[in-house]
Length: 66
Image 1 (cartoon, one colour):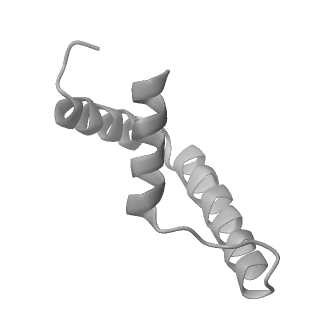
Image 2: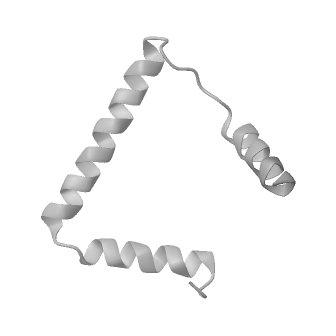
């Protein structure tokens, strides 16, 4: 936890790669399914979209006020 964020990300990636390929494929497949479901819901008009930068700005502002 004392590593800088970029180094922690590299470590996390290395750990994920070290998992057996079947587990990694299952995780990737599950995320792909979630992404496809979310895109389909957006295209059907069931959910809206928000600008990423605006959302992060609101989150950061909320954390400062917490």
